[in-house]
Length: 352
Image 1 (tube, rainbow, N blue to C red):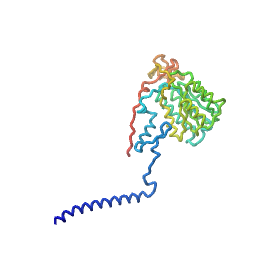
Image 2: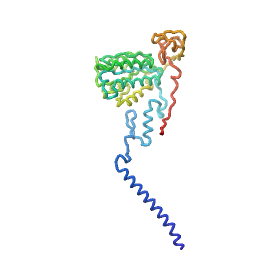
Image 3: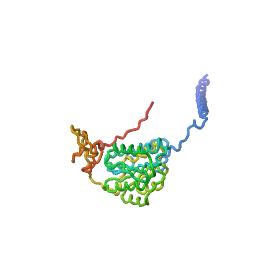
């Protein structure tokens, strides 16, 4: 009897072990049965482990792929933690050269290249003034082998967008001349102070340019004036435009779709890094209050009668909107909120 009692626990343990093994085998058979198709099996997505940083593909672990990708996409919104705080040119002088030639009629971007690029440029204008309120921005349009001044430095952002809409309503016409556009931009930027940046952003939708002279002489002028040329191309890559961007220390990219184009534009909203040729100086900045009056007076920006305007604290001239540059004292006018740093937000995962 004692031997039978000693054997029974051993038999029960064997039965439990055998049951667990059979259960694991049945579970594996079920997985093989329901995952018999290739698209139902777990795929090793190796392409998700490659992250593009500064044009170089880097291999990261699968669990860190999303984190690395999000950090790179947000590089234009916050400083790199590893690189520390970087010195940037806060006072920007920026000329946007916008292609309105026949090539912008193509419908590979919906509704067409012209309207799709115009929407992205509007977001760029708003983002540039949001990131750097002391920015001066001018718009230049290319059509019929000519460069047309759409807006000058000192124009408020809202008016810049209105003038761009008027230009887009005129449609796309003729062939572009990249050299004429760059020459006009050089004339605008050449006299700017050494403590400010000198930048050109080209939005180009053609694969050719019809220039009146040798564009390499224009490239030398850009280098002599320390002007950086950046380009966002809607058409396939054009060698001469990319060559100019590389030689002047700018960037060149070809957009794949509307969303990618907007991301490329957003990369230019943050002020660029401080260049070696730039000289730091102290500059005056005015904070004009918004005042209302019972009697109308002329604004200095449009020469129109207005009851409400921003009054310069030094010369008492009136402007319709800020940020802008006072046309009397030739200094930047903006509100204190423009200098407040953005709070870094944490991405939240929505659960339905």
